[in-house]
Structure formats: structure tokens, C-alpha cells
Length: 536
Ligand code: C2O
Ligand code: CU
Ligand code: CU
Image (cartoon, protein in one colour):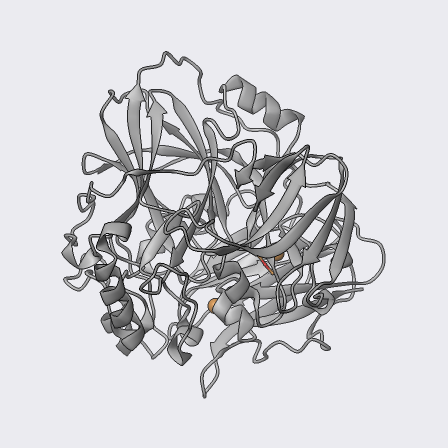
């Protein structure tokens, strides 16, 4: 409680700087009109250098984890970043752009005062290349990576993974995109006249708390560690309420939820209406077919690849990337707290809860994140293909492995009753073949985005879904549009049982492997909601 009050006051004091127009003043109805002031900074777009600059590695890239003064677009505060140079240009948190089949060589140089290691999230690679926490290197040390890029085209990412420090280091800025391209994806982009950094825009969403002088503040209370650390300001590519100037054409946004804990229900809102958009990809690249949507849940670690058609708009019109109301389902205290803390669908309490250190902005509140401002007309006559690059859909089957998520009696989250122990591997895949994992999250719980390293999976079925999830099902298995295709992170809502099909034969890593399965709520992960997975 004190935390969020402190933040509220500090933000008020910094009104000129942060121009938040706190959510307390926002109407709580569905599609609440976005507050249209304060959108005067540009959305940082990946360019040829600098923060989130596009870097196609030529030879080995050195990524130096370090504190960079003045880097955070929102307040000019220092932030942690991976600093790199290539061809005389300097980058911070470069958006790495790779081609399928190419060799990737990188060296992490740890300039932090504590251990760190880079994990390539969603990127195929044997476990020694994947950033297991047992490989964390100390201050002044480095770690070499070298592996071929075998993923299909898609939007992957990278972030720190030292045990117990993942949330903090990510929060202070360490993370960026790892984009893989291949011939099919390049043909798709050409067909739609999409260019990375111009009209194909990677956007990372992260919520932050600030100290009175605009510094990033990561100081979770016990309650924050239990539920996740929420910030009162949601940044897009590090900027608060930024604007991107657009033309009347098609845009592609690759949206990554890089927050430690916050869930989003994203929409593109214009004049009080959610515009339709087309979901073409998720964690594992292209979906089997395009999906037309008006809103989409995005949990920490997940990515969506969407196309937004702005042809019907006129210069001067605005579209807001906005969070729409939903029930964040914080039912961890048996539902009693849920009503108090969750805000709830269309409830009168959507103005944010200062309880629970949840920050001043509730997950289920209606709030704008970024603005698209139509600046000019453009003739554009390309059509979204009805088919996307082919996706092999392997058979499912094999042994069923039940995975139970639960809260321990004295607090803290467990998987199959266990928390992380570096030297133990409670999940052993004895025979490399198909397995079905059935993840169950009890009613008296909260949503957990569950992530597996090393292998993609397919979502087979959702059972017991809450109404706000069930209503979005696209098939008889209760799956959501974002469940189609390949996933590496799946949100399991309270009450749900989600079945996954994992094929441990592909990739065919040489020798025994030790991967991780964990909750991508990074406070949960650091508190031990993670297990080693040994693949024999
Ligand atoms: Cu993105 Cu093990 O994490
Ligand atoms: Cu990962
Ligand atoms: Cu969790």
C-alpha cells in the first residue's frame, strides 16, 4: 500500500514529466475514451543504431550488460542494457536480426556488479547455449555462445536468467528482440511491402514504477513477490505514451510482453471502437492461418505478430494501442481478495487499486499505451494472403504428464509441490518422443504464464476456462487464436487445465539436456516457480 501511494505522489509531483493523467480519472466503461494528452514523445523505432537498433550480426557480437546513463526514453534515467558495436555504430539492446541457417556467435560481457547470463527465449539451441542459470557468470566475466539458427521465421527475444535476479535485471532494462527471417517470411513481407523498423515494428511493453526523480524503482514487497510487481506506467519501447506517425496503409506490429508480471488485453482503439486486426503469428512464428480479432490477451513472455489496416482512416485521426478492461483474476486468497484486488470487468472499482502494492494502474483497467497518428495518405493495394507459410502439424500423443500449479501454505508458488533447486531435475524425459503435459491451475490462484526452454509445444485443449477466456475460444477444444501454431509460453488461468503436446525429438539436441520449465511471471520465477527438466 505504501509503495503505490508513494508512487502516486511521486508521479503527481512529476506531472510535467510523466503526464500520466492517472487512471483514477479514467472512465471505467468498456472502450473508455483514451486520454489524448501527453502523447508527445515519439515511439522509439528500431533504426540503424542506438536503443533497439537493428543489428544483423556479421561475425561475433559482443553484448555488454551494463548501466547506460540517460538511456530510458520515458524519463532520461539510466537503464541497464546490452551494449554492442558493429561497423562503427553503437547499439543498446539491439534488435538482433538473423537468417535461418546462419551461425550465431555472441559473447556476453558482464559489466554488472552481480552474476548474469543471457537466455535466448524461444530460440532453439542445446542447453549450454540457452542460458541456464547454472552458467551465470560473475562481474567482469564473459560467456561465449555459438550455435546455428534453426528456428523458423519468428519473433523471439533475449533477456537475463541468473537465478533470483531475472526479474530485477529485466526490469532495469536488459532485454530485446531476436528476430529470425527466412525465405517464406521475406516473401510475405515483400508481398505486403513491409520493412522492419519502418512499417514492421517490434514493440516491447513494460510497466514501471519511478522514484520521485524519475529513476526506475524495483523494490518489491512480500506481496509483490507473491503476486508480481506492477508499475503505474506502461512503457512502449521505453517511452511513456509515445506517438508513431503513420500513413493510410498496412502496418505490422510484433508485440512482446516484456513486463515482469503484468497481463495485457490489447486492442487498437479508434474513436471509441476497437478496430479489427489480423493475428498472423505468435511465439513460434506464423499461425496456420490468419485470425481476425479485436482484442488479445498477452502474458509476460508471449509475443503476437499482428497486421493493422489503416487504409480507412484520414489524416489527423488517431488510433490508440490500449489495454481493455478484463478481470485479472487475482483469486489467490480463495476468491475473496479477487473482488477487492481484481478491479473486474466493468466494475466500479476499475480506477486502480492502491492495495497490494499493485501500483496505481490495475491490470484490468482501461488505459492507452501508445498512439498512432495518421499523418498522410498513401495508396496501398496489397492483400493479406489467406494462407500463411506452411506449418508442419505433427501428431500428438505419448505419455501424459500432470503438472499442478499451487500456492504453498506459507505463500510462494510451486510446480508439482516443488520450488527450484539448481541441482535437482524433478521432470525427467526418459524417452525422446511425444508427451502430453496437462497443466492444472486451481480456482484459488492467479494466472500463470508457463514457459518451457528448448522445445516448442502445441496447445491441444483448454478446459475449465473462465468466461472471459471461453468467450474467445476459436474451436471446440476451447483454444484461443493465440494458441494456434507453436508456443513457448502459455497463460494458464485460474480453474483451467491446459493440455500441451511436446515433441522431444525436435530439435534433436546431442547428448543429455537440462532445460527449464517455469512461470514467466518473473517474481514467481525468481521465488522458485521453476523446475529443471532433464532430457535423456
Ligand atoms: Cu523468457 Cu526462462 O525465460
Ligand atoms: Cu525461454
Ligand atoms: Cu506464476
